[in-house]
Structure formats: C-alpha cells, structure tokens
Length: 212
Length: 101
Image (cartoon, rainbow over all chains, first blue to last red; front, side, top):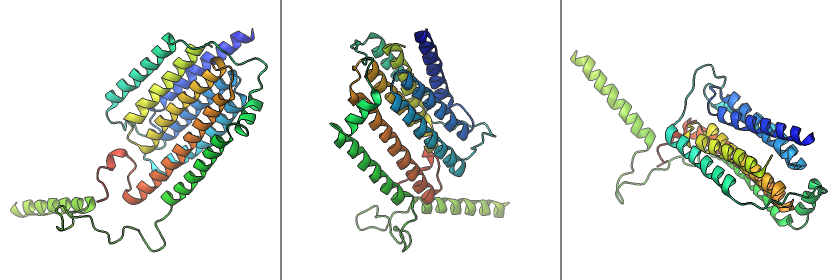
C-alpha cells in the first residue's frame, strides 16, 4: 500500500517539476517565473524525501525558498514587466535552443533507458543524516571546508562587484582606449560612437528641414 | 519509482534548463535556466545514491557540493547583474555588444 502511494507521489511530483520548469520560460511575469522555478525545486525536494535523502530534501526546501524570494526581489528591482501586465517574449535563437534542449533530453533519456546501472539500493537500515554527517566531518572534511572557502570567496567577490567604485571616484575615470594603430589616436568608445551617430542624424534631419 | 524514471525526469529538467539558458535574453532568466539544469543534476546524484550506489555517503556529499555551486552561481550572477546595470543600464544580454574599449 505504501509503495503505491510512493509511486503516485513520485509521478505527481515529477509531472509538477517538469511542467513548472517548462512554464518558467513561458510566463509573461518574471516574478511568476521565479515562483514557478521554486515549485519545480520543491517538487524535486519531495522526490528526494521519497528517496530517503531526508537532509538534502529539507535543505533544498529552505535554500530554494530563500533563493527564489531574492530572485523575485531582483526581478522587481531591475527587470521590465515584473508583474506580467504585457505579453513578453524576450528570446534569441529560440529554435536552436529548443532543438539543443530536446537533443540533450533525448540523449540522456536513451542513456537512462538503455544504459546498464547496478541495482544496488541503499540498505534499509541506513541512517542517511548520520552517514552524511560522519562523511562531512570525517573523510571528506577537506572537500566540505573547501566548499566553505569557495562560498567565502563568493561573498567577497559579490561585495566587490556590486559596491560603488572606490572612494576616489570611478576607477576608469580619464582612461582612454588604445589607438587602432600603434601610437595612433585613441579609438572611440561605444558611447562616443553612439553620440556621433545621433549628432549626424540630427544634422541630416536639420538639413532636410532646411531644404524643405 | 525506478532509476530509469528518475533519470528521465532529470533529463527533462536538464533539457528544459538548457533551452532556457540558451534562449533567454534577460540575465536573470538565463540564470534560471542554469538553476534548472543544476536541479536535474541534483536529482541525478540523489537517484544514483539511493538506487545504484548502495547509499554511500559520497553521493550525498556530491549533492551538497552541487547546492554550494548553485548558491555561488546565484550570488555571483546577481553581483554581475548589479555591476553591469551600474555601468551601462543594461538588463539583457543583447545590450552588451561592445567591450569597454
């Protein structure tokens, strides 16, 4: 009886995970997209719980709930159309991307169906949390601590990248692009080129008005 | 719930995520595609740990590492979005066609 319910829950969660994962890229609202991604993660977390990975499933719940809230906040702060009031389709090369995505899905599915994997399930009396804890603070402590150091480096990098540039003004102030020829005059930056193009356009328009 | 079914679900998540990462113009939507791919990879790791790897603890450790990678990708991605927005008011990949000099 338990087996049937496990199967039903698994298929339900699998369907939810894949469907909401697909809807992430089909919804008009970016905030809604981040919540759909959250639903996909939660469904995968439930599948992990079904597989007896108690700690990992629960950790995924907490981590993704926070991460997706941050993502939704960023959507509201930076992106156009966070509420989905207008239809939105901001894609490039959609067919190539869809084709490649489908090819990867087909390839991995073929491996899953025709590949031979050892049927070697976890023993029933395994305590997954205890075994993970012993591994993290035992044999694999170096790996675990390295992940911690990497996260610390990420924190520093994030602050450096997102903070205002230097107390003495922008670091690139007064810098000039290198010349196109060695020793030649500096090449124009993109902003200057854009300005020049706009000035030319204005001049042409003035000229046309003048001629008329 | 067999290993094959779990791997197919993971493959669907990875394929969808790849589509998103390659097709979206907005930085944050692109990051969502990457996250979805990592979601499928975590499912793979847990499925192999539970059904093919005799419950060896390194399987769970791998999932923890993928979670850390996910957090790093997310934090650095947002920091880059902020940095790019500060310098060029851009929020799509198409807006970044020129190098600084």
